[in-house]
Image (tube, rainbow, N blue to C red; front, side, top):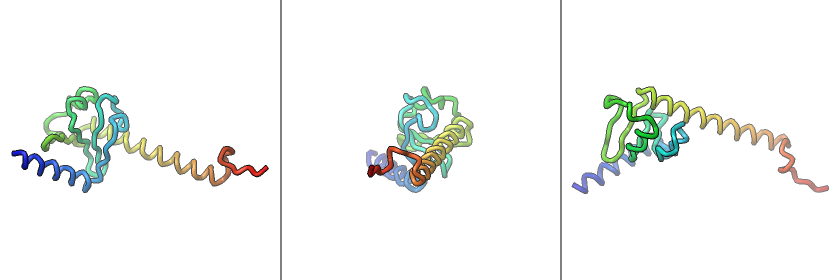
Length: 123
């Protein structure tokens, strides 16, 4: 029995890698921080958690019906076919893009000498 559980956990871990899943805080997808950490795959369109109780209570996922979630071993996967999950994934994508844009802008500004504290003063 325990061997089966270990095999399932290995398969789920491999699936996380194959689907480019990221482990993020609930805040990264626009949820209450008390929902804890979760996994997100923007490519596959799901959010997964080992701590479903917190995610459902603090993250509002308790209203996601059985048709939009699957539990494999200790992990519950929530499909982006449900609007709550789709909104969380969209939030994550928007924030991720915003951060990338801000970093790119800062690199351009530094290159153009717009940050005086970065200047090498020889005076």
